[in-house]
Each structure stands twice: as structure tokens, then as C-alpha cells.
Image (tube, rainbow, N blue to C red):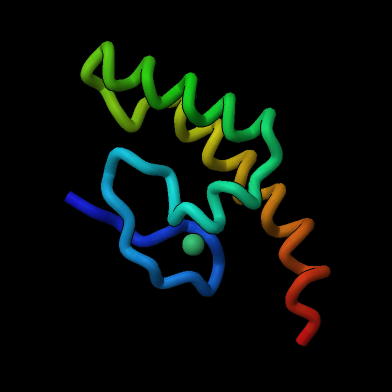
Length: 75
Ligand SMILES: [Zn+2]
């Protein structure tokens, strides 16, 4: 299973074990990456991935991107 990198405009296919492509994963701040990583491991342990806490972290990441990607892509 793979999915698309959730970063707006990015079409890179990434494995289901990763949140997004390496380039955009590294673009996230450390606390968001830690949050997503923690929620993801928990979901795998309980067999309920993607779980609610992962979705919360994912939503927070998308909100962060919406704020910061604006400045990078003016146009
Ligand atoms: Zn990407």
C-alpha cells in the first residue's frame, strides 16, 4: 500500500509506513514529527491505524503547512 504525500501540490507516492515524502517530512517542525511518529506507532501497536490521535496530528500538520507553505509559494 502506498499513498500520496499529503503536502499540497506534491504528487510523490510514499509507502504507507511514512507520513509523506522525505523532503516534506523533514520540512515539518520537530514537535509535529514527534507527534505524528508517536501516534503512528501507537496505531500500529493497537492495530487501528490510522487512529484518531494520528488523524489529529495529521490535521495539525496540514494546518501548519497551510500557514507556512503560503509564504514559500507566493503565486
Ligand atoms: Zn512531498
